[in-house]
Image 1 (cartoon, helix red, strand yellow):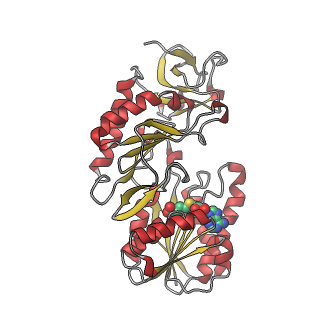
Image 2 (image 1 turned 180 degrees about the vertical axis):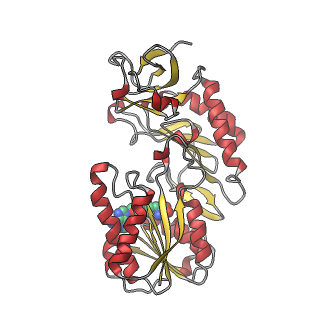
Image 3 (image 1 turned 120 degrees about the vertical axis):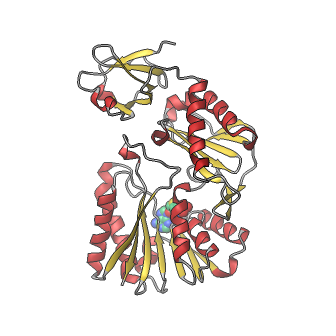
Length: 391
Ligand code: SAH
């Protein structure tokens, strides 16, 4: 099969030799006016030598590389990649009688840039971040059906918010159907997942291991879970014997979801929810919590907003550090891609200094293993967390 050829400027092949999966538009030598968004292209160096195959898009990231080998990007290519991705999750025990929620494919981390697939007890929710992946949906759908076999009830495509508006894509089932919300399990906790109305694909799967760790610390403790969304941290704390858990979110819908999950798991007596702005609540904290979770949405999605975001993280964390009980523990997170691990740690240290209290870092946390980081694409590390203890 022959693909449209795209040449890169002299010297711009270096990042491709290092297996970085993105080619920026400024690196291209070929005029791309005639190339359609989402087309598969063959990338060559300035001398016409093969470098890679990828999805083209008329955007800053012009090519997302699918392969560094000369091969066909067809049904069997997607079958091989999706099978590999699923096998790696099964190997580490993510599909079990206790756990039926996991990410099957994490874009660059699984060699499929632009493609996210989450699995909720029989249903795959596909989110495309590139037009190429959207065009490849028939191959992706058939690869998923083959990999899961009878364990797959439905595939829902949810890319209207992640693709350019001009495509006018609608979210829809592309295989089977399933009523929402749909029950699924994360480490023994039952959830009702709604990929149609919920944020992202319906659930924040990347916090699974961090919820479990919080659970380990929670026996007999009074816990405040801010930015709770569907209540993941609260439920794991309750499952592992917390004395009392308060869940806080500014969204009424999030609180309703959390409460539904609390009653679904029969933890009602030890739980209360608070609909409020987290910053306001933390500023005036009147309760004495043993543990506080701070998991805000990305304060900065772009570099220009980074400074503002840092101020936000610092303020929020300073309130928590100032107010927590002596010996209390804070689980604090940032999912802003433009705030790296070091900058986040420095921000928390700055917040601690501001309060004058003694703070120790007990653990450094990150996204779960079903959100792997491609070693040649360190930008893939987005979720950072710290467990700190305040004396
Ligand atoms: N911790 C959650 C995921 C958090 S998503 C989990 O484990 O699933 C971020 C949440 O922050 C959303 O539910 C959103 O409604 C909430 N949020 C955003 N701004 C807020 C604010 N100022 N105060 C409280 N909650 C806020």
